[in-house]
Length: 218
Image (cartoon, rainbow, N blue to C red; front, side):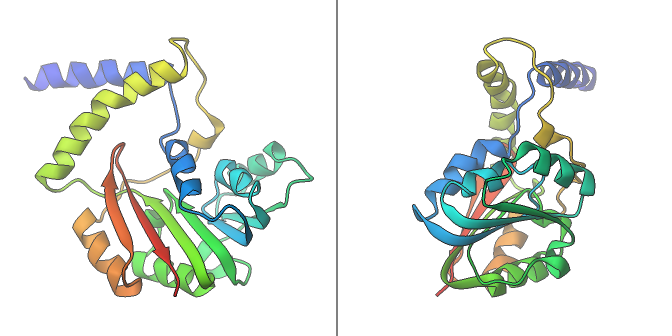
């Protein structure tokens, strides 16, 4: 059985490499639905190649994207219309972010690289009263619900990739070139930590190895 599973994983890996797609970008439209139609300043923490920051710019007066990787940040600048109200900064989100307040703070697949409580405290303090924080994060599978969601995601992942590319092989998206590390906290640990810092935050496990957090500052 172990040999069969290895062969199955190898086939899935080969298929996913032929039809790659960005799991984080899958949630961008969902993120926009959590936000007001128009807002002033927005911060995208861990902005990567800038896909979400550019979407936010369609609603914001000003967007700041910050990422610790200078290579992917340079690529974000290349991909962005100079007339767009977006500035990309290289730096540590926790220490180098331009001062707030921000009406919107987003963070996608980056918060697991930081101390969670410190990161959420930083985002909370950067938000203006009435502002919205939206996080899409990664968590470590731990309980039967995680196993079930992982199983569904394993099946959906190649299917979505094939449908998105209409059955044609495609290059790896620029947004997927950044180096990432596995998550270490379980969903239960994340919920407990988040609600200590952000009372009444809404957290949900999602498909494709992600969870979401939405919080509005009083």
